Image (tube, rainbow, N blue to C red; front, side, top):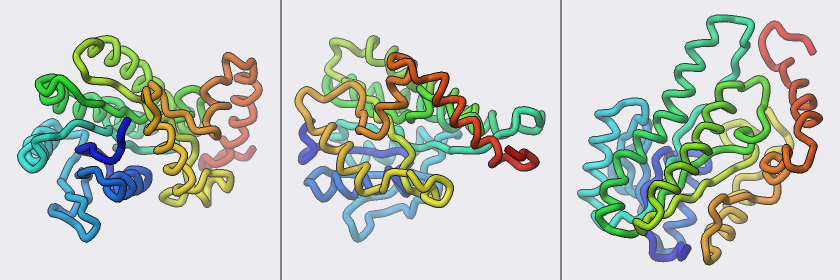
Length: 251
């Protein structure tokens, strides 16, 4: 994928990985717009235009879609970056509110954004949808069960979307980040990959021809291929030690 001449909208691109990706793409020569709940509508000093977007709200997604296409009618790439990572104690029925929020944002939010922009991309006869999952989609992190489930669902949805769009000129690429040091992640996980290092490697992979179906940086491969490599059970058991993070849990 040529990253120097794309016209990109990143849902969830106002912070974290999404924002850094937006900056790098803009610096490479692409036209980039981002959307988020805390966006400051208008064009920033970095040339990136922001749009208000709540992926859990159908009307908000539709408004953002219309505003984006009005400003950048040549849009050819949509990235579904918006998501939440929340702890859950499954022994406490109150966790269900967290589960609902997680599914509505990570899975249904992805579907809403994809549905909103797919007709435009199909009419162009060319373009790319970039979905965002996680290494946790393939190797669950027990303190975040619904996060893992939602990202596994986005992976399956991405596979089906790719099959359904085959032959239309619209491709589907899945970005699979490992733990990346954003929004305090470096405090929770000292082994999180520095943000700049992650984006460097991810963009190198995205720029390959042909573009890989899954963007797997080296750090995430142990997650993606754990079942194939026979390390799945051992690694999940190791990660279960993190249940001590939950309130009221001790070891």
